[in-house]
Image (cartoon, rainbow, N blue to C red; front, top):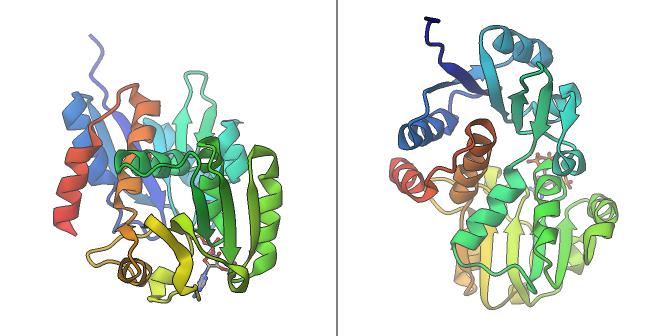
Length: 274
Ligand code: ATR
Protein backbone atom coordinates (compact mmCIF):
# COMPACT_ATOMS: atom_id res chain seq x y z
CA UNK A 1 0.00 0.00 0.00
CA UNK A 2 1.36 3.41 -0.87
CA UNK A 3 1.82 5.80 2.04
CA UNK A 4 -0.91 8.43 2.41
CA UNK A 5 0.37 11.75 1.16
CA UNK A 6 -1.50 14.91 2.13
CA UNK A 7 -1.89 17.42 -0.71
CA UNK A 8 -0.09 20.63 0.09
CA UNK A 9 -1.31 24.18 -0.57
CA UNK A 10 -0.04 27.53 0.64
CA UNK A 11 -0.35 31.27 0.34
CA UNK A 12 2.72 33.05 -0.98
CA UNK A 13 3.29 36.65 0.06
CA UNK A 14 5.90 38.90 1.57
CA UNK A 15 5.18 39.66 4.33
CA UNK A 16 2.59 36.92 4.84
CA UNK A 17 2.54 36.12 8.56
CA UNK A 18 -0.67 38.16 9.02
CA UNK A 19 -2.54 36.19 6.32
CA UNK A 20 -5.92 34.76 7.24
CA UNK A 21 -5.82 32.26 4.37
CA UNK A 22 -4.39 29.34 6.42
CA UNK A 23 -7.26 29.70 8.89
CA UNK A 24 -9.86 30.00 6.13
CA UNK A 25 -8.64 26.98 4.15
CA UNK A 26 -8.26 24.82 7.27
CA UNK A 27 -11.90 25.63 8.05
CA UNK A 28 -12.98 24.81 4.47
CA UNK A 29 -11.05 21.52 4.57
CA UNK A 30 -12.61 20.51 7.89
CA UNK A 31 -16.12 21.32 6.58
CA UNK A 32 -15.72 19.37 3.36
CA UNK A 33 -13.67 16.51 4.79
CA UNK A 34 -10.72 17.18 2.48
CA UNK A 35 -7.29 16.08 3.71
CA UNK A 36 -5.04 19.02 2.88
CA UNK A 37 -2.26 20.97 4.47
CA UNK A 38 -2.26 24.77 3.94
CA UNK A 39 0.56 27.01 5.15
CA UNK A 40 1.83 30.58 4.67
CA UNK A 41 5.15 30.95 2.87
CA UNK A 42 7.15 34.18 2.64
CA UNK A 43 8.69 33.91 -0.84
CA UNK A 44 11.91 35.84 -1.48
CA UNK A 45 11.21 39.15 -3.21
CA UNK A 46 13.64 38.34 -6.02
CA UNK A 47 12.69 34.71 -6.71
CA UNK A 48 8.98 33.97 -6.63
CA UNK A 49 9.22 31.42 -9.45
CA UNK A 50 11.90 29.52 -7.52
CA UNK A 51 9.69 29.42 -4.42
CA UNK A 52 6.80 27.95 -6.44
CA UNK A 53 9.05 25.33 -8.07
CA UNK A 54 10.46 24.31 -4.70
CA UNK A 55 6.97 24.05 -3.24
CA UNK A 56 5.87 21.83 -6.13
CA UNK A 57 8.96 19.62 -5.64
CA UNK A 58 7.83 19.15 -2.03
CA UNK A 59 4.31 18.02 -2.90
CA UNK A 60 2.66 21.39 -3.48
CA UNK A 61 -0.53 21.11 -5.58
CA UNK A 62 -1.69 24.71 -5.58
CA UNK A 63 -1.28 28.09 -3.99
CA UNK A 64 -2.82 31.45 -3.34
CA UNK A 65 -0.69 34.43 -4.21
CA UNK A 66 -0.87 37.79 -2.51
CA UNK A 67 1.08 41.07 -2.42
CA UNK A 68 3.59 41.58 -3.99
CA UNK A 69 3.64 38.49 -6.25
CA UNK A 70 0.37 38.52 -8.22
CA UNK A 71 1.95 39.85 -11.41
CA UNK A 72 4.97 37.56 -11.14
CA UNK A 73 2.65 34.61 -10.63
CA UNK A 74 0.84 35.66 -13.81
CA UNK A 75 4.12 35.55 -15.74
CA UNK A 76 5.18 32.07 -14.63
CA UNK A 77 1.96 30.25 -15.58
CA UNK A 78 1.90 27.81 -18.50
CA UNK A 79 -1.82 28.34 -19.02
CA UNK A 80 -4.08 31.03 -17.69
CA UNK A 81 -7.80 31.76 -17.38
CA UNK A 82 -9.21 34.52 -19.56
CA UNK A 83 -10.24 36.57 -16.52
CA UNK A 84 -6.69 36.38 -15.12
CA UNK A 85 -5.35 37.45 -18.50
CA UNK A 86 -7.60 40.52 -18.37
CA UNK A 87 -6.57 41.21 -14.79
CA UNK A 88 -2.88 40.82 -15.60
CA UNK A 89 -2.56 39.06 -12.25
CA UNK A 90 -2.97 35.63 -10.70
CA UNK A 91 -4.05 34.87 -7.14
CA UNK A 92 -4.58 31.13 -7.59
CA UNK A 93 -2.05 28.60 -8.89
CA UNK A 94 -2.92 25.02 -9.64
CA UNK A 95 -0.54 22.26 -10.63
CA UNK A 96 -2.08 20.19 -13.43
CA UNK A 97 -1.65 16.41 -13.68
CA UNK A 98 0.61 17.12 -16.66
CA UNK A 99 2.92 19.12 -14.39
CA UNK A 100 1.94 22.42 -15.98
CA UNK A 101 1.02 25.42 -13.87
CA UNK A 102 -2.44 26.91 -14.40
CA UNK A 103 -3.26 30.41 -13.13
CA UNK A 104 -6.55 32.11 -12.31
CA UNK A 105 -7.75 35.11 -10.38
CA UNK A 106 -10.66 34.68 -8.00
CA UNK A 107 -10.68 38.19 -6.48
CA UNK A 108 -13.33 39.60 -8.80
CA UNK A 109 -15.68 36.67 -8.53
CA UNK A 110 -15.13 36.84 -4.77
CA UNK A 111 -16.30 40.46 -4.74
CA UNK A 112 -19.32 39.73 -6.93
CA UNK A 113 -20.36 36.71 -4.81
CA UNK A 114 -20.02 38.70 -1.61
CA UNK A 115 -22.17 41.51 -3.00
CA UNK A 116 -24.79 38.99 -4.16
CA UNK A 117 -24.78 37.26 -0.76
CA UNK A 118 -25.41 40.60 0.89
CA UNK A 119 -28.30 41.38 -1.44
CA UNK A 120 -26.59 44.13 -3.45
CA UNK A 121 -28.01 44.27 -6.98
CA UNK A 122 -25.44 44.83 -9.73
CA UNK A 123 -27.57 44.42 -12.82
CA UNK A 124 -28.76 47.86 -13.89
CA UNK A 125 -26.85 49.57 -11.09
CA UNK A 126 -24.82 52.77 -11.44
CA UNK A 127 -21.42 51.78 -10.07
CA UNK A 128 -18.45 53.96 -9.13
CA UNK A 129 -15.08 52.33 -8.53
CA UNK A 130 -12.37 54.34 -6.76
CA UNK A 131 -8.80 53.51 -7.72
CA UNK A 132 -7.11 52.20 -10.85
CA UNK A 133 -4.39 49.88 -9.55
CA UNK A 134 -4.03 46.12 -9.63
CA UNK A 135 -6.83 45.52 -7.13
CA UNK A 136 -9.34 47.35 -9.33
CA UNK A 137 -8.15 45.82 -12.59
CA UNK A 138 -8.74 42.40 -11.00
CA UNK A 139 -12.45 42.96 -10.36
CA UNK A 140 -13.63 44.79 -13.49
CA UNK A 141 -14.45 41.82 -15.72
CA UNK A 142 -16.71 40.03 -13.20
CA UNK A 143 -18.41 43.33 -12.30
CA UNK A 144 -19.12 44.15 -15.95
CA UNK A 145 -20.40 40.61 -16.50
CA UNK A 146 -23.30 41.50 -14.18
CA UNK A 147 -24.37 44.18 -16.71
CA UNK A 148 -24.53 47.32 -14.57
CA UNK A 149 -26.16 50.40 -16.18
CA UNK A 150 -22.77 52.12 -15.95
CA UNK A 151 -19.39 51.66 -14.32
CA UNK A 152 -17.20 54.72 -13.78
CA UNK A 153 -13.63 54.51 -12.48
CA UNK A 154 -12.24 57.53 -10.62
CA UNK A 155 -8.60 57.76 -9.68
CA UNK A 156 -6.11 60.26 -8.23
CA UNK A 157 -4.15 59.86 -11.47
CA UNK A 158 -6.98 60.41 -13.97
CA UNK A 159 -5.11 59.01 -16.95
CA UNK A 160 -4.73 55.59 -15.29
CA UNK A 161 -8.50 55.38 -14.84
CA UNK A 162 -9.12 56.42 -18.44
CA UNK A 163 -6.65 53.80 -19.69
CA UNK A 164 -8.23 51.08 -17.58
CA UNK A 165 -11.67 51.99 -18.92
CA UNK A 166 -10.34 51.72 -22.47
CA UNK A 167 -8.86 48.28 -21.72
CA UNK A 168 -12.29 46.97 -20.67
CA UNK A 169 -14.48 49.00 -23.05
CA UNK A 170 -15.43 45.92 -25.09
CA UNK A 171 -17.09 44.37 -22.02
CA UNK A 172 -19.63 47.07 -21.13
CA UNK A 173 -20.50 50.69 -20.34
CA UNK A 174 -17.29 51.74 -18.62
CA UNK A 175 -15.68 55.19 -18.29
CA UNK A 176 -12.79 56.63 -16.29
CA UNK A 177 -11.42 59.95 -15.03
CA UNK A 178 -10.17 61.94 -12.05
CA UNK A 179 -11.82 62.55 -8.66
CA UNK A 180 -12.72 66.14 -9.47
CA UNK A 181 -15.10 65.04 -12.23
CA UNK A 182 -17.04 62.60 -10.05
CA UNK A 183 -20.74 63.43 -10.02
CA UNK A 184 -23.30 61.71 -7.79
CA UNK A 185 -26.29 59.38 -7.65
CA UNK A 186 -24.37 56.08 -7.52
CA UNK A 187 -26.07 52.91 -6.29
CA UNK A 188 -22.77 51.27 -5.40
CA UNK A 189 -19.38 52.85 -4.69
CA UNK A 190 -16.45 50.44 -4.33
CA UNK A 191 -13.24 51.73 -2.77
CA UNK A 192 -10.32 49.92 -4.39
CA UNK A 193 -7.67 52.52 -3.55
CA UNK A 194 -5.04 51.80 -0.94
CA UNK A 195 -5.93 55.14 0.73
CA UNK A 196 -7.74 53.31 3.56
CA UNK A 197 -4.44 51.75 4.61
CA UNK A 198 -3.12 55.16 5.60
CA UNK A 199 -6.47 56.37 6.94
CA UNK A 200 -6.97 58.72 4.00
CA UNK A 201 -10.11 59.47 2.06
CA UNK A 202 -10.27 60.32 -1.65
CA UNK A 203 -11.93 63.74 -2.21
CA UNK A 204 -15.59 62.95 -2.94
CA UNK A 205 -18.74 65.07 -3.25
CA UNK A 206 -21.50 64.90 -0.62
CA UNK A 207 -24.15 63.84 -3.12
CA UNK A 208 -22.21 60.73 -4.13
CA UNK A 209 -24.83 58.20 -3.14
CA UNK A 210 -28.30 57.48 -4.52
CA UNK A 211 -31.06 56.44 -2.11
CA UNK A 212 -30.43 52.94 -0.71
CA UNK A 213 -26.85 52.96 -1.98
CA UNK A 214 -24.08 50.64 -0.83
CA UNK A 215 -20.49 51.61 -0.02
CA UNK A 216 -18.00 48.75 -0.27
CA UNK A 217 -14.38 48.94 0.84
CA UNK A 218 -12.13 46.18 -0.47
CA UNK A 219 -10.13 46.57 2.76
CA UNK A 220 -11.35 45.29 6.12
CA UNK A 221 -10.34 45.58 9.73
CA UNK A 222 -11.60 45.56 13.30
CA UNK A 223 -12.91 49.11 12.78
CA UNK A 224 -14.67 50.51 9.70
CA UNK A 225 -12.34 52.32 7.28
CA UNK A 226 -12.50 56.13 6.94
CA UNK A 227 -14.30 55.64 3.63
CA UNK A 228 -16.98 53.47 5.24
CA UNK A 229 -17.43 55.95 8.12
CA UNK A 230 -17.77 58.80 5.62
CA UNK A 231 -20.24 56.79 3.51
CA UNK A 232 -22.30 55.64 6.48
CA UNK A 233 -22.69 59.25 7.62
CA UNK A 234 -24.13 60.04 4.18
CA UNK A 235 -26.77 57.33 4.29
CA UNK A 236 -25.04 54.53 2.38
CA UNK A 237 -24.92 50.96 3.68
CA UNK A 238 -21.26 50.27 4.59
CA UNK A 239 -19.73 46.87 3.79
CA UNK A 240 -16.08 45.92 4.19
CA UNK A 241 -13.97 43.44 2.25
CA UNK A 242 -13.94 40.55 4.71
CA UNK A 243 -16.61 38.73 2.71
CA UNK A 244 -14.63 39.22 -0.50
CA UNK A 245 -11.60 37.65 1.19
CA UNK A 246 -13.55 34.55 2.20
CA UNK A 247 -15.39 34.25 -1.14
CA UNK A 248 -12.20 34.48 -3.21
CA UNK A 249 -10.72 31.78 -0.99
CA UNK A 250 -13.81 29.60 -1.51
CA UNK A 251 -13.44 29.89 -5.29
CA UNK A 252 -9.75 28.91 -5.07
CA UNK A 253 -10.69 25.96 -2.86
CA UNK A 254 -13.31 24.90 -5.40
CA UNK A 255 -10.73 24.99 -8.21
CA UNK A 256 -8.36 22.80 -6.23
CA UNK A 257 -10.77 20.33 -4.60
CA UNK A 258 -14.01 20.55 -6.63
CA UNK A 259 -16.07 21.31 -3.51
CA UNK A 260 -17.86 24.52 -2.49
CA UNK A 261 -17.43 25.28 1.20
CA UNK A 262 -19.95 27.17 3.36
CA UNK A 263 -18.53 30.68 3.53
CA UNK A 264 -20.96 32.23 6.03
CA UNK A 265 -19.76 30.22 9.02
CA UNK A 266 -16.12 31.03 8.28
CA UNK A 267 -16.91 34.74 7.86
CA UNK A 268 -18.66 34.86 11.21
CA UNK A 269 -15.69 33.28 13.00
CA UNK A 270 -13.23 35.59 11.26
CA UNK A 271 -15.31 38.65 12.09
CA UNK A 272 -15.22 37.76 15.77
CA UNK A 273 -11.45 37.31 15.67
CA UNK A 274 -10.69 40.77 14.19
P1 ATR B 1 -3.25 47.74 -5.54
O1 ATR B 1 -2.60 46.49 -6.01
O2 ATR B 1 -3.70 47.70 -4.10
O3 ATR B 1 -4.34 48.19 -6.43
P2 ATR B 1 -1.64 49.84 -6.66
O4 ATR B 1 -1.62 49.15 -7.96
O5 ATR B 1 -0.40 50.46 -6.12
O6 ATR B 1 -2.10 48.83 -5.52
O7 ATR B 1 -2.82 50.91 -6.67
C1 ATR B 1 -3.11 51.73 -5.58
C2 ATR B 1 -4.33 52.58 -5.91
O8 ATR B 1 -4.69 53.39 -4.77
C3 ATR B 1 -4.10 53.55 -7.05
O9 ATR B 1 -5.31 53.75 -7.73
C4 ATR B 1 -3.67 54.84 -6.30
O10 ATR B 1 -3.86 56.02 -7.03
P3 ATR B 1 -2.75 56.50 -8.12
O11 ATR B 1 -2.95 55.63 -9.33
O12 ATR B 1 -3.06 57.92 -8.38
O13 ATR B 1 -1.42 56.28 -7.46
C5 ATR B 1 -4.62 54.77 -5.13
N1 ATR B 1 -4.19 55.54 -3.95
C6 ATR B 1 -3.18 55.24 -3.12
N2 ATR B 1 -3.11 56.15 -2.11
C7 ATR B 1 -4.13 57.04 -2.31
C8 ATR B 1 -4.60 58.20 -1.63
N3 ATR B 1 -4.01 58.63 -0.51
N4 ATR B 1 -5.67 58.86 -2.13
C9 ATR B 1 -6.27 58.42 -3.26
N5 ATR B 1 -5.86 57.35 -3.96
C10 ATR B 1 -4.82 56.65 -3.50
